Image 1 (spheres, helix red, strand yellow):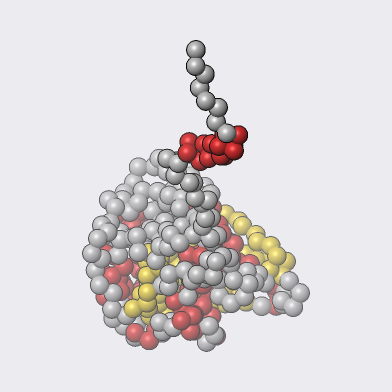
Image 2: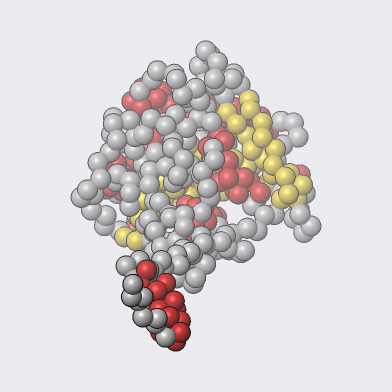
Length: 364
């Protein structure tokens, strides 16, 4: 029997060293995933910033429970408490009044809690009128709510002003009134602003309409918005703009220097992505507050109010300026996609309005 010849020791060692490489030659090396940048942080100063003037907030509901079978004729009042050092006591100063109008089936103010908290702790009284039950199972249409809401809003405002005038409340300055509305609430906010003067109600100096929606609602009162009112129509690039552009076209009395049409844009550069959709203004009920709030709706309303009330922060509110368009920086220093500001919005080319716009306010 012949034995196989022995291989030299050096050759065996080389085979042992090379064999692992040969075994893994067909495997693709795994790339180490690169983490996406984090969200921008809230600015520490200026409009939209984290600069509260009050440490507390008092929330009170007046009138019948809107979730009961009784017609929703009441309202929520949100007032600042515990002024920080240097802020005059509540009894010695009058505060701006913000009339906040919710979306269809958005009658629970918790949906807007972060924004309301921001406004109040910066030094405003917020009135949140009831005009729809917060019960999501209640059967009603957006057209029915839109038809009944204007009278309910006027009643709630009159009742709230009477309540504020009595008892131990913060006192409103009725020369500094702002109105903000989301979705159906934006249409109702425009309707209120166009009719307030002839109804002997406070005329808003500032009006922000966020993603307006309700094709079944009448828009004729929009022509009555006075020329002295500063107006912003704010939409997202993932939201339908049909009603927003119709509202814009009918604001004929408001000069272009006093109004802008602002389109916020989605941005997937980081994690989580920024989604400029119909629900964006409703950053409550578990949804995250992000740059679309701090540099978008919050910044724009803060600046619009300051511009209309005392002539400050106007470049952040109007004029297609860098300050107005700026949306913050991702954690890697890359700017968030700027807002688009225009005085001549066109009709949307892709998105179509949901049938109920939408039935609920989904979390982002």
